[in-house]
Length: 153
Image (cartoon, rainbow, N blue to C red; front, side):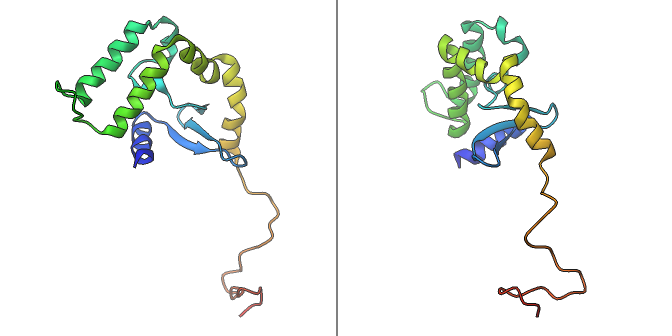
C-alpha cells in the first residue's frame, strides 16, 4: 500500500519510480525533462521549486511542511489525511530540515556532478532496446507455435 501511495503522489508531480536493469536499484525518473534522481524529489513533494534550493532557509522548509501538516493532521494530532502520503511528506521534511542530510541529498541528486552521473540512467531509460539476437523467435502467424520441448505441433 505504501508503494502505491508513493507512486500516486510521484505521478501527480510527473515522476515515476523505476529500477535499474541489472542491479535492480531504485531511481526516480521524470519523462518530461528526461531527468533522474536516486532519491524522491523532496523539494517538489513539499511544494518547493528545486531550482531555488539554494535560497531556501530552514524556516521556508518548515513553512512548506507546516502547510501540509494542516491538511494531513487535525488540531488534536490525529491524522485526517492519507498516512502513507504524510509519511512521505515527513521523510521530505526530515531530510531537508537538517543541514547535513540536506547537503547529502542535494549532492547525490541535484548538483551538476550528480546530474552527470545520472545521465547514464537517462540514456538507459530512453534507449533500452532488446538486442538484435534472441534465443527464441516468435513463430510466423501461419506457423504453429512450438510445444514445451521446442517441437512444432
